[in-house]
Structure formats: C-alpha cells, structure tokens
Length: 138
Image 1 (cartoon, rainbow, N blue to C red):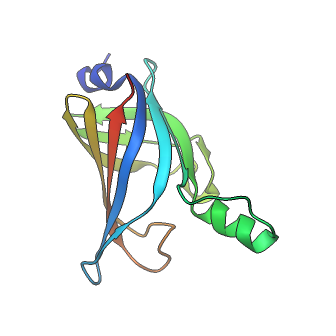
Image 2: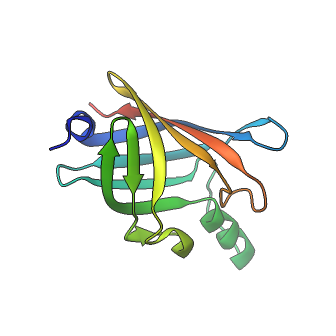
C-alpha cells in the first residue's frame, strides 16, 4: 500500500472550498458541505452539496442545486503528494473516465487538496485554482 494512501484511509468532513479566479485573482468561497473517503483499495469518493440547500420547488431550482453538487468516485494513484484519480462514477458525466490531478498537504487530521488551474464546472468559461480543506472524522 502506498504510504500517502495509508495516512488518508478513512472519512473526512468538508471544512471549506475556495476558488482563486485566474482572470481576476478574486477568491470565492463556495458554501458547501460534504464528505470524502479514502479506502484501502485506493478509491477516493467525494460528495459535496450546497450548504444553503433547501427543498427545490421547480425544475429550475432543482437544476441549480444539481449544478452546484459535486460527486465522484474512482481509483487513485499517488506520486508523492500528487494524487491522480480517474472517476468511474461522476455526477457530471464530463468527469467520468477523465484523469485529474490534485496536490495534497496533510497536517495531522487536516487535509488541504489543491486543484490546479482548470475550468471548473461552477464557473463555465473561466479558470480557477481550487483549495479544499477536509477534517478527518474521529
């Protein structure tokens, strides 16, 4: 088993999700809640939903909530602090089977995951660097 994976196995609770926009430098904090898990087989599963989610009353509201939801799962590989995951499940079908890289910083029970610059589905047509902070569940 990979040494980094061994340190990550378990469940983690989302603490914050922030995006630094490449075009303006603005930092946008997304009010989200969620969990992620790393299992001993090397699978990473992530589910996050809007923290301000309430019951939608029409199709437009349902679509807006769905567009702000992130869910994926897939096997991951580690190279030092670089994680590459290839989702075999994703709420956004564009992500399914598409490898993506995340950089990890582990400090005891706190995990910072950095998404290198990319066009995030939350910001069509714009690029951003994402920083996600997770807290290990006890």
